[in-house]
Image (cartoon, rainbow, N blue to C red; front, side):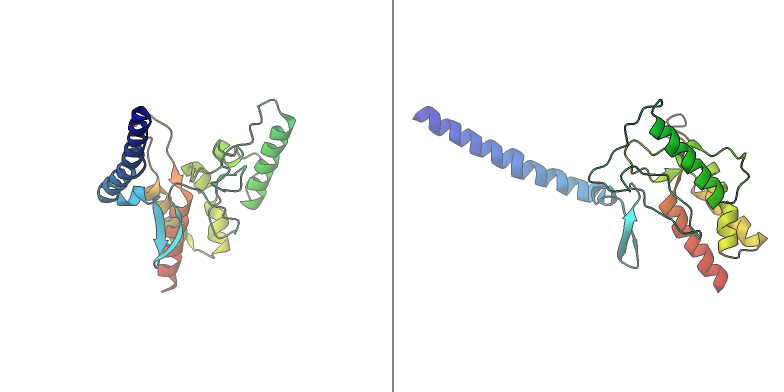
Length: 195
């Protein structure tokens, strides 16, 4: 009986310690030290949450930069890729269709080399970044859709340059640009040009 009571006391102590005290302590430290990251790196506009810097979104309109394709339609709950191998005929067909769609949508020459992130879905299906080259290939389409003149188009290119993040520690990954942040800046450019 004594052993059973000791076991129950230890069980209750550890449950309170690891199930209540520790999570509250870690959450409190995170909220004080890294509030933005602890809350999901959310982006707000006029106090309304419009997305997270960590999760890609679909932008299908001609007036916005397109995101990387997603096998899960940017849904974070079942995140993941298709798991198709390079020899899979369905993957080859998807890649070719995406390549043709990118070229047609952006009114590019048929021989244009489309960046790989615009034809392959990421492993998570949530990647929010594209390469600066993929963004630059979309500039003419967006400028035409928004009736930009050459000066406005130059501002758009400068915006791409300013938002481009370099490889982490100069060697991990590649240069990248967050599509949601880029489209938010695009809206700012358009609103300032209307004034």
